[in-house]
Length: 172
Image 1 (cartoon, rainbow, N blue to C red):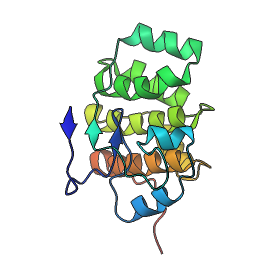
Image 2 (cartoon, helix red, strand yellow; image 1 turned 135 degrees about the horizontal axis):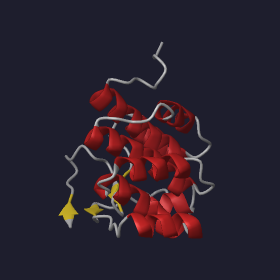
Image 3 (cartoon, one colour; image 1 turned 90 degrees about the vertical axis):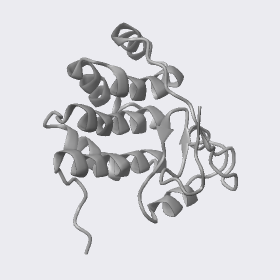
């Protein structure tokens, strides 16, 4: 387990999922979390006034077959951390990438957001993505869920940094 300090650039990590790492967007995204919904709990916030968790828990990955089984069962609680783990640990790019693409349209906001975040991990680790990835992240930036928008924002930064691909509109 890794303890993060207040000077650490990652502002919140819970269950292996980084919430945000960019500028003042953190305050905006945190302000949009309300009550005790699932995305808030997943982000490490039990209540909107409660600080984020300062502990990192390594996501477990049991392999491609376990991922395929979880997708088939459509178990959001299992898929949410598993898609991040697949992006981090799956050795076969196509397996991880196709799972991220498929789950980026999932009805559950945490699964959807984590699948988009997984695309950023794949950009960093493999240095490649399919042609649909930038559009998926663009869609995530305007998602109705603050959690998904936050993960898409982090992924947009990864795309720009690791692939030289800009998906965010130019700021006026």
